[in-house]
Image (cartoon, rainbow over all chains, first blue to last red; front, side):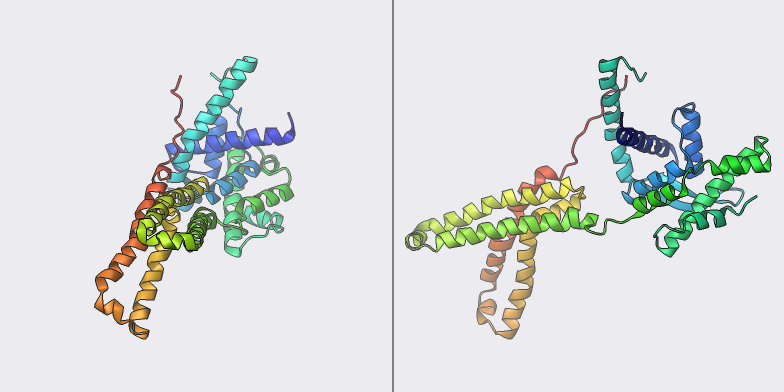
Length: 113
Length: 225
């Protein structure tokens, strides 16, 4: 698989992971990376370098919106929340990935379940 | 503990960003690094080991700088509003205008002029009116394809009629006040009828054409296993 295709897959899965997480609640960057790593048992891992360009791109497209907010300890963090456009994007993305895994499953016996 | 903010600021010097945007990004990335460092420390890593661990978050700062630049770069050639509103609107206006021009050229041919009194004028008008459905559909389709909102699709679809309304709104008062055009004062109902015929009725047929494209594209999600 070429680096370009791998990069597209990583990017697409990253977008879906972020949208799905933010659909549950607004989160800040570090927490997004932590929860994705934890909930996928490390299969998906975001570093600062991979996370923020993606978040900024999604913000530019209007899928997410970032807002500075202080936590209980008074530390400022930029919380991202899903916008209506991002919410609309989530269902088609899920469907596309499901079709992708089904296609891989039928071709190579790679089940996503 | 390092000054994470200063570290990020120094390493992202090459990114071309507006000053306010740059400071916000520096602040956010520094917060992330600081939190990563603190987490490493609470896991029992020494200060030096925690710093090394945190710095591994970014393998190549020049690549990150480039990626942030691309991610935050606005589409300067054509922004979203241009693509989803103005271009589709101009497309429907151009198509409607060209069609009207062609129809006018054809109807001014001598053998047509002879028949105009025999009801052909009315047929041409209704043909023109029905054709607006296509132009309304064109504007709304192009707008939806570019990700336009429902309002943008309505405007793009009905743009030829909106322009006509605008022209009437300017031309009629100017004509009445400065020419002065006594006809407007003597027969205001005819003027209103003219606006209805050349702007109101086409607005309805344009909207009819746009209607199928006002709904969101249905991409049903398969049932969960």
